[in-house]
Image (cartoon, one colour):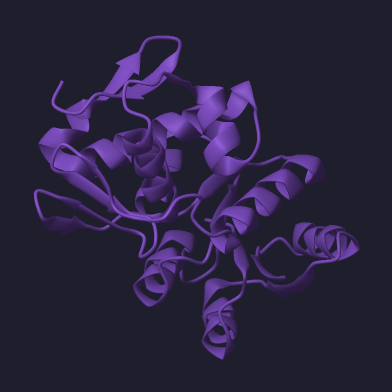
Length: 224
């Protein structure tokens, strides 16, 4: 698996390259987004680790460009910006996950493996799933509301698929983290909340069908 690391701090970039190589990943590093774009043009990597504060072209600008070219390559943001608004903004621009600095290699490895597993795995079920006037096609990874297609990120699509497959089932945040992202961690449960918020927005009025259970999690109740 080829990982592209975009990080302007040389010591951290080299540390990541060394650590990921020791985990048997093929790693290419870039100190700025402009060089990274050239590398992407040469071949889309299997996963991108992206710092936000870069010289020249900023991380979110790079992400916007990549998403116009490829909607599926997993992108994990690694950033010292740890505010909720920063995390939400990163997810809005199409990141699959957000890892605040400093972080452990163990957690980074778990996030990378989960992202690659989701990107490379086949749908658990085939056939179009219908809930109310929301339809989900796991085979083509397309979703629609009242016949109108909606554009979802990989994680948003995975969340919607899980919800519509199991209406009225209560999912805790940790269950969603484990199912969709592949790991459990109370400290990053806001990742789930941010993705659910984005999914609700894209579903429009149907977003209200994702019910919040305070201090517990979420459930899908079509038409409720």
